[in-house]
Length: 377
Image (tube, rainbow, N blue to C red; front, side, top):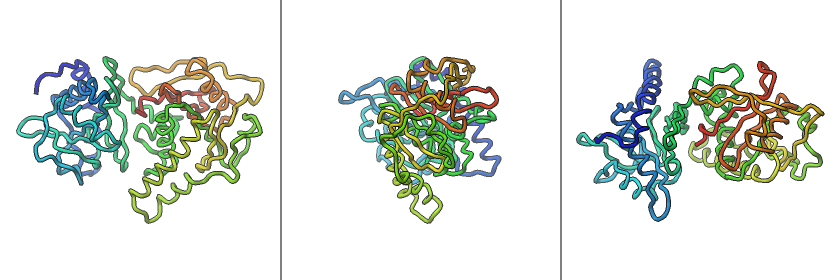
């Protein structure tokens, strides 16, 4: 394999392999078997290099959207295997992109006669598999297939010469929101289908529709949130819309896993669509939708003037900022809502793709803004 011409590949590969090797060793120590192999540094560099240059190509006027997984065919479950493997070359990857651009389809890459080759496609990957997703022109996301079924966790984001390594140590912070813990691969509520995981799915769907939006998650046993909203509510639910809660409840019954996941995806997308309407969508901690298009107002005369801002990226220090500087009116109103309703959580998606979780910090005595867009790519 030739040396990578994308210099970031060499700069970041060693750090990435430390991460994957650490998780792999911990899993083996816990008695896990059939784990994905960890690539060596040469392989990791070659995968990143090929993915980057493929991302800059255009096929029929479109940028390729592909996912590369370092895995042998025998660990990839039911898969589509090519009779003749393809070279790991940017031109070949871009040419193949239209056939594999749908979510959850990965191009399997493995050594064949000493060379890295694309052997086929798969939807099934073993735990801790090294995955590179081409998310846009010059934009790569290094992902890890987690222990949770069907779930991937972002490890790093590479954009041109910018390197963002996810700091999974943020999950150990005493006041880390459950949604952020789930995004980092530490789901405190158990398997997929629990509230934290569902809110992650909702966050991703909100971000993907590109119109921006706000979700206010409030306690189910209180109506105090209404004191921070302008009544009457144009789009109030009576009774509350419980489809998302209903589908989540079916996770524990004897039901086909694929059918359940399809039902959950449709339910999440339905709620995410409501967030595209101007105003906030209010959902309680039982996942019942109470209203959407809700206008937020201050509860009293005390206005939030600053929030503490953190991002789970290595080398990023906490800072204090005016909430309006995070993204404008939507962020300011969400920060004010959490300032007034301290048992609530606000999820805010910007039209430009930024995503923020607002939560009251008892330790800091102020609103904490967690920037998590790097975890949602």
